[in-house]
Length: 71
Image (cartoon, rainbow, N blue to C red):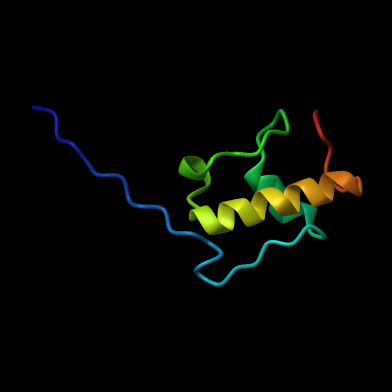
């Protein structure tokens, strides 16, 4: 008989106190995939408010060439 396990709910890292800034590309790389696309909320675990903030910071970092648009 197969037992079903519930996945642990992801908590938003920004609500927990961590910050995301466009000047730190190493942190932003956790929120983009290998092709350079922004990961969705269901993957990152961010709340909707902070997911919009993450997307804005990634776009800013791309515009000043800290992150690539594509790989």
